[in-house]
Length: 89
Image (cartoon, rainbow, N blue to C red; front, side):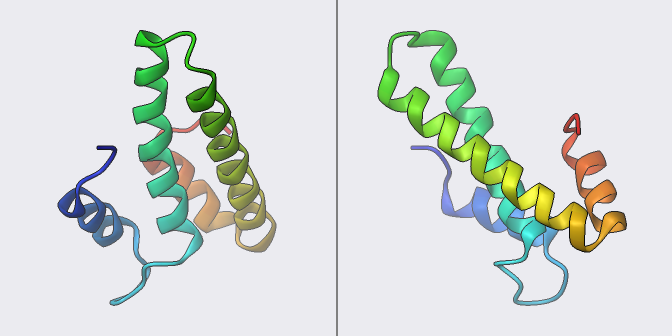
């Protein structure tokens, strides 16, 4: 299992902008980053798992698009999020 309900709730609580926020760009990027980290570790063990590799590529592209949107709309929120998640953008 990729992420338990408790882990997901903790990530949402950490990155939300206000109470009840589950769909902001920050939350979506944080959840995608967690899933990408899990799949990256999976790919280190299972090098020939091409289905998971395709999913990892799709998740990375989705995160990149969300980060580009956030950078375009609010640069300060983008910088804060990249720093919190330790991404190299």
